[in-house]
Length: 374
Ligand code: COA
Image 1 (cartoon, helix red, strand yellow):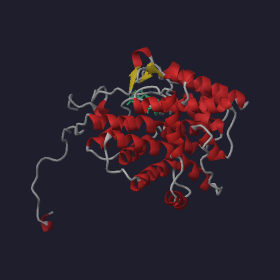
Image 2 (cartoon, helix red, strand yellow; image 1 turned 30 degrees about the horizontal axis):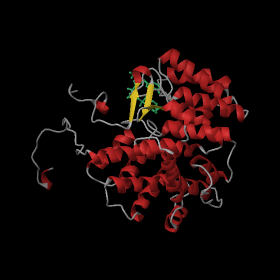
Image 3 (tube, helix red, strand yellow; image 1 turned 90 degrees about the horizontal axis):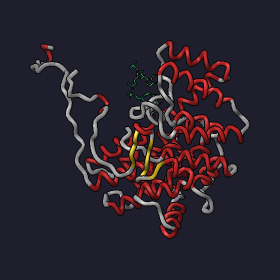
Image 4 (tube, helix red, strand yellow; image 1 turned 90 degrees about the vertical axis):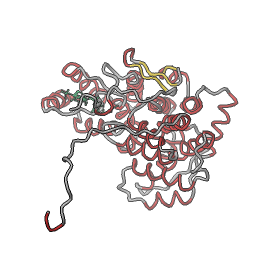
């Protein structure tokens, strides 16, 4: 292969960003300069969402307004609810999220306005409405009544309420909130880069986020948290874990929830999420997946020197919280909308069309023959 080609853009720096910084050498991640783990311990997800979208943590007045805006935009239009009710019940919820965001773009009065102020307003609407759309599908496909959003609940509480009709205890809500903070932003990952690439042609935010959702769905990216759960369900019991993982590695299998393009000696988000996974397992009095988790992790490190990424602890955590497995990546979506939106606005503010080159390796130049000569 041509030495100039950086397959998968590995190691290539393509632009600047002020949204977040991934520092694999010191195993750290900052959003707008704040360590993600500090934000997890000191902030609610909504404060972090504000930070990512606006560049600064909110003061009291700004926070109050932000909460008002988020709560005020949660309700879906009748048309969107009707569309959700017409979706095949077997649809993957990631495709539902993608379609819902795309439809929101058809309804949005500012779709064609790509100014930073309009984009921020549109980002808020997508951020507020997408959880409602996903929860509506969650209920609809089970033949249950759709539960509208509730104004006196936090972003995390409201999602539980709309999916299950009740809000769990505060420690479970906190674990969910922490997962949202950890999923909110991660520099130029594939879905964010997709969003920026779409934006670079001066396309709109609904299109960019729809594309980002499609990208996140893949098992090498966000879809890994669902795959982790499929793997854990296959392993079933801690007694089976050692044999299963050794067998998978002997057969050169890719073990989901492990490895990362940037972090090579551990994902900075894992220790925090692992701690909250343990808390949820304790509350639920179910240590099965925790035991499987530890065995698989130990073998992966010993045999391959490959460490878990954040999808490894979030998968079983969401399972213990009661979510269907195919809703794990959609939960990632409702959080990452903040990061994507910030990058879309950043791209618009200093745009350059993203158009790389390709080294052609197809047929040599040839002449077109008449139909009867071919
Ligand atoms: N299980 C087993 N082996 C793995 C692995 C995993 N999860 N992740 C990487 N490896 C191995 C590869 O097989 C490869 O081995 P080789 O050099 O002998 O061929 C080597 O480690 C390098 O991996 P590669 O896939 O080339 O690195 P990458 O930077 O392109 O890939 C991922 C990064 C994330 C795509 C990859 O680690 C992966 O597929 N992980 C599982 C999916 C996942 O959890 N994704 C979520 C990421 S946040």
